[in-house]
Length: 191
Image 1: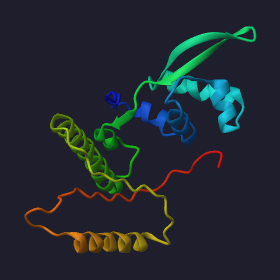
Image 2: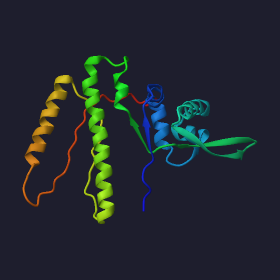
Image 3: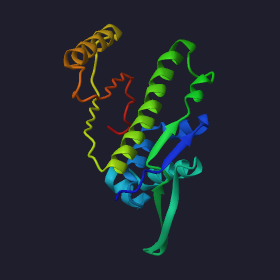
Image 4: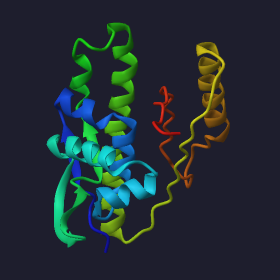
């Protein structure tokens, strides 16, 4: 049986500022298993000192922790691991003064849907575990490049039309929850 994912709930804007850095997000993604700054630097083709700096920032924010140490070539090598598999950000953070008030509604909507989706996914997984049934689920995650905000609105309309075409309510139909989120992509450092 697979262990439940470890979840961290972040309500401190300073921790979000640490975690949002593209290189730090990549480091978090790579820490499924304990790893050293040297191994991570080799994997990312970056200087070890740079990776070590970012690991210390993540450690200071409580997002990674020291897993173990081992002697290696006359020094003590530190192996880090992620403290959580999933990081949830308190939507209330968006209410701070750093975000333009005109953008809050959209961002709060995205965070609200994401929070609801996590709750729903957990409930579906729990129900499946109790009943012994399999879960029919799919995920589509893609970065696309749109010409303008008008193209984004057009895409939302088209996605709505696709969903409407496939909706077949009635007895015996498979009810699924579909969520579409369009949010600016963050630039990936080092790409």
